[in-house]
Length: 267
Length: 320
Image (cartoon, rainbow over all chains, first blue to last red; front, side, top):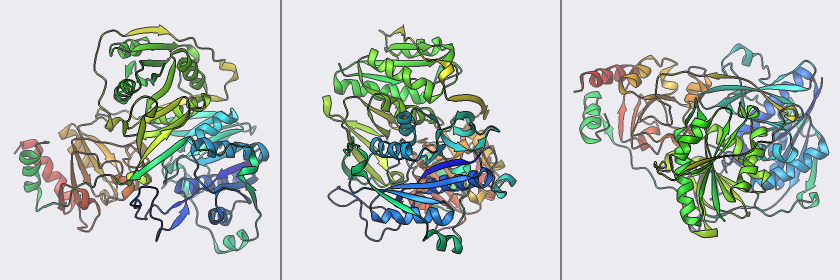
């Protein structure tokens, strides 16, 4: 049973970048900061590609943002996604808005599965997939993982962690939750958000990068989608957290023990 | 009315400690809004958890029904929405656990409510309550306003004092109108990681290992047991399959704030530090003197963890 999968990607600050807040607290300093695809979204793209490789179908990659977000769509196309959609938007967004826009796109594209990263590493909200599932009245399975480790044979063989039923109508999802792992079965269409241990994303090959340049990327203005574009999670001010004073060294274990025992009194 | 609905999470009939922190946050919020705190316990056969919640002075709504036996966002969302309406709640609070993160954004969306996640603190009064939450792996703190009539947030349990026992609580039934046959999600199984150790997020001491352990956690686990501690890990150790997923401490794993955090063979990537920098005392043991973990450690020991940990265990055992 071929699967049509919509997978979302967000352009975010490179997680290795040093993030500094502007002195007036209105945003972060973007000079010298590199951008890339949200790492969780890379895992979503990889899973979509593995599902397509196993079952056939189509992988559509979507992003919301300015012109530069096309870079992240092209990255996903270079990994192997079939075509892209950029919902062109300038200005602030929040998870309610992002999910409303993806709902409109989902209604147009009618995928069997929407895959999203469980959170983006800039806002760290971890909400969009859950709200999208609610808006669509679909099943949701967040924090998708798998029981095998990322060093396992199943991972070496690039097997998808999401398991499609024989009739192609349901999918089993292993979830990382507190105190263990849970398995859910969702009826398709469904929304699944992915966690770190689902897979190791592939690197784009050179031919993949060349092919990606010719793949279709449709642009849709968010203003045309009939969504009120007013964020409801309003950021008033940003600031940097207090710095932790550290850096002291001890020479050996006896000194460490003495400090913990007599100075910090924690053991 | 600007009442506050707080969602309970229970395990084996007892409220989770994270829920007590969420109740503490809800009480703090109710003082600011002038409303009452109402608890919501959902599940099957969970009267004991409802009674426990009421013993903190809360009016508790108990949604007890066979269809709620296993938690599913899809089936619990309508119950939260109905309970919020019945309770006259304009705020909904839960702890930022896997459960709260999964459920609250969906349940809030049912009510058209905006949600803030991982909230660290509250400020302001009345309709002008503002929330502080971390962004960019805790490198930035944002002050946010929720501009919807009903508002929701998850709290980071380490940042709020737990609720205290009080009289005046009560339990009333919350009707459940969920049709099991219409659900699109089915619970299949839960594989619990059983452990005699304290929960990572609740432990007084955490001993954590990273890439430097090369997969050998034996001495670290021994030290943890000597200290009555929980064991944590960096993403590298979990990704390698050396230890269970739910040991991961960091931006996307567990956030801990123990009295003592011992990081052995962990370099200290910002994503890991985001999950443990709230510890009172941080010890770092690492062979690499340049490892970033030393910048935040109160006591840094440059050396081989396979020598240092057994030596430390001797000290712990002898007490001197």
